[in-house]
Length: 472
Image 1: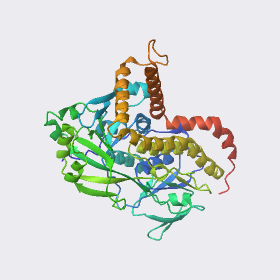
Image 2: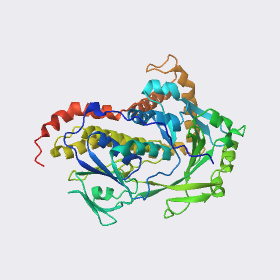
Image 3: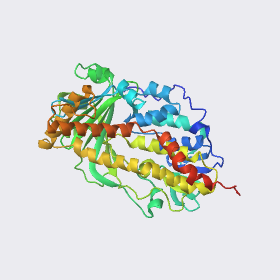
Image 4: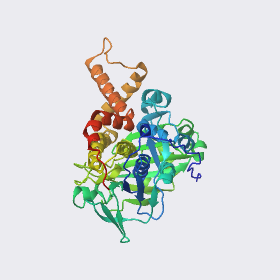
């Protein structure tokens, strides 16, 4: 097995964020959860001038999982925070995304990434191991925050706010950010009752293998030598694969409709034989890849419906990331949404000068983030149906649109329809332009710009006047 690449390149955090602005009234803020979203939130709030404590239930700080795809909307933030050198060291820049037919490997569509994406959206996509991303965020935040392990939150009074730990200790704070993931404890205090995630009926196998064994096989070598995100589309299942850890490892994620009972454990180690049974008849390269996996982790895919609000009614508890908008892995935006949440939250709270502003700023955070995150949740659910179409008419229509999009891509279609287009082509071009617009909205988003714009348009006049001399 290839050695883990956690990264040693220096982190160069910015001397200032938020245009040099820091809160004139520092708060004691507790972030519950030391995952990707929690670390990002802790860092951003600390850079905004606040005293931040992270409460983590685990005994040690770390992250499990496999590969993760980072789109430009999140990499621009990581680079702004000083992580560019670390990304270059441990991540891989994919040159394209290729969609393939499950049984033949035929290319249905190839979307150029790399420099064209950087020119269009101002940042590159990266593929990275989740543990490496977690480590770089921890190294970024650690000098600025107090991280406490073995601190499982079992209850809280969100009105004060205070948190009770399993040890019996009571932790006091001015503000609590619930970043405790899909199985969030803090979420129930916003909802007002226990609120468990539900099974989707799907599961995912995840595996990582050293790339030297792929390079030794003529049929698999190109998967490493030409780093791309490759997605094979099949009936009720799909496979996504790409390089991570400076091309030392190859990541494979296999999503499928699960026949096991929903009460089964969320994550279990399973034999390779069970995994390969789910992908009988897939193209020869898939069979070769699966034969190289001795065992795999199986993850039950759980979900939650969108919340009506992320903020407790007393305005001293807010949720972030998977605690309020968990994402299914069909659009690759889960980590991005959590990190965007953190950036907006930190930016807004750099304006704080009075306790009277805490609740309004939390509601501003929700107003800025709710629609975007909820849309990403919804799109991820809907995208599963597109990826998992059974063979037949709908699948053939989908594949035809993908082939047409690939053929039209070099033409750089503009709003005007070329003379001689049929109605069908016109509809196809319109659909493609709509898709391009959606992608531009997703990848072109800058969380800091949105927060700055909101403050100048609304916050300065609505929240700024709440500044009062502090008596505390």
